[in-house]
Length: 178
Image (cartoon, rainbow, N blue to C red):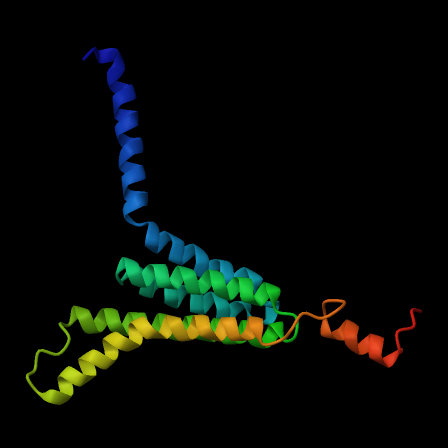
């Protein structure tokens, strides 16, 4: 190979390594991005708590498997969309989404510590039950979170005017425009 082409080969090699590293860690990157995106859609008063929850859930996703990181990404995106779409009580829903993400972050960090310590290797019956409960909880919690978001979005039918405040104003003024 000519010496003139070597710098181009090195640059191409560096680019391919970067693409490979990004592709190998796409789940964790999506989870971190989704977690911090949630902190941008919550009300200003809840932003500190949302950032703390984003740090917890991001650390949990970084120390967990790719499937759990994808679950974090799904929870973050669905939570952000639910907060943006909710018209009846967006502050309450935002608080529940932030709390849910923070709790799942703590669960993931605990699960990562639990698996790093080797879990339970005891032959006792109670230890194997606890092992099963821990593993089921880590994978079932995101389904409950997504069910909470779906319930919040689908519990109220669409309203004319879009916002509950507009409906209350229409009823109080008996439809008269000022």
